[in-house]
Image (cartoon, rainbow, N blue to C red; front, top):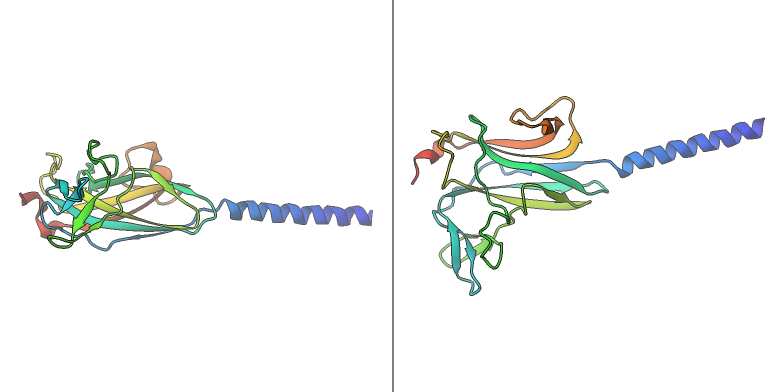
Length: 202
């Protein structure tokens, strides 16, 4: 009887260890840092390059910001619903991904000018959803396109940038979500751009 209890105890401890290991293996933990502000680059300075390394397609009027994500989990984590929007109307504002750069271009790469003859490559996201590899660092440069704002946006005073991960949040829901995905954890930031008078720029 004593031996059976001892074996049962060992089995119980092993089961507990396996349970804790399973929880540890599937934990989802990311650290998110948004840029504290937006940058207003000179007009036409965000552009692509052609085969000869010359400036090609460009965005006339844009804003730049970024988000940095550390996935310290031992598993990959997906993100989705990456969006830029006017916080007053909740209307989406265009931003650049590799899939939105015109397809005839040979490379879906985007650059921003330091000066007339110097530029650097932007780390734009692939799409509005993607994957954050296990134990990785990801930076996404968010290029907000202001060339064609929705006509409903009369004065652009605050801009929101956010995305979600497939981890349910039972307390804090996305206040701007209009789909059933509002129950998932959201990361975001709101920028006050009223001093820039963006709606009046040409």
